[in-house]
Length: 196
Image (cartoon, rainbow, N blue to C red; front, side, top):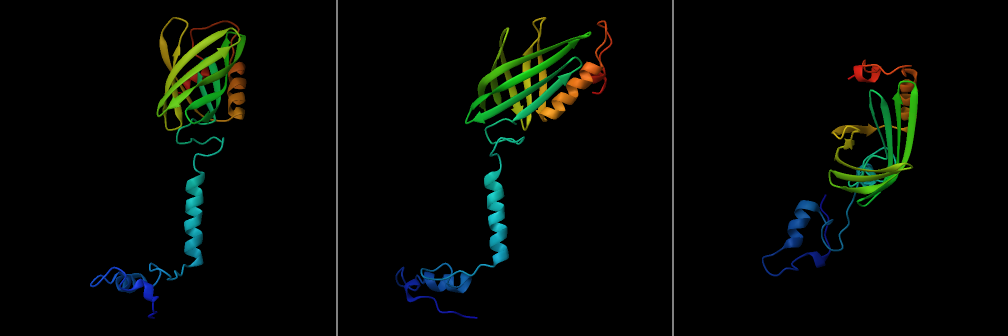
């Protein structure tokens, strides 16, 4: 089926440059001034769905990761502790809270602190203000996994890995940690250590 395109689309670029004629042969009148484009509804719906899905990636405060942000809730654990980091990221600024529960024999200690810091690419710097002190942490964000370099009581620095989870998972890990609490400290690691 051949359609005539508006005159304004023909010969506008001077002699020998029939842009309108070329576009009419290839695309019909859709790409010429005054031309119309016929789009199938299914193709338009698919295109809009892809655009909306792409635009919504990384937005909001769910468990996902934004382009510059961290997952909203991260949980890490080792043989005697469980830690949850809940954050909101705005640009490169990070704010939130850090909760950690540690078991020593039958003694269960919980700490809650306010978090502030920055995330720039993969580099993360956090300051945690606990009731009894302040801790500065540096780390690396790789995908949705945060690895913090955590100072230890003996002065060493150890990697502490936090991965996306929710509050229910954190609570479940605390219950399991408390259930495994021993009356006296032992050289045998807890069941969390054996799972690795």
